[in-house]
Length: 210
Image (cartoon, helix red, strand yellow):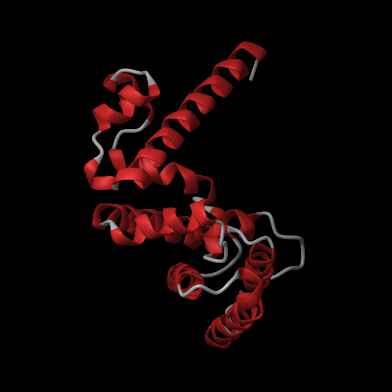
């Protein structure tokens, strides 16, 4: 990539970020369903066609905030250290993200993050789009596990279980925080739940090379 191309890409990324953050601020203030794409475009001082070049759907404006986690499980498997089993790499990564209070684990009590998660889980169209994200994560992880040596059926079954486990762990952590507890107060329980979940995954996948 030459310097000119790099500058264009960085400008596109900044524009995409500005559009998303402008939209999310409006969504959190007034509710996702009560804000139109035209209002987002006006607030960001761009035309609707320009906005749609960056975000094909209104839901994508909201989910851009978590788009960098798309395919993360597959990346962890592909980038693991030599000699580390895929499941062990995923377990260690999830624990590390818990310690970092990464919102993707549900364990982040920053008020703006909690408000954003409330919006995601209370808006049907966003939940539907999240399911599409999860399906794509599952597909990518299955491919990575197959590359790691699992047969196609085992890779698909394992990927479905792992993505589902991550979703349940994040949901339970978010519910704890929604009840008024702090990340510090629930961190130990979150780690314990993750350990139990991965122990169960390991028991079920024992002998499969994962």
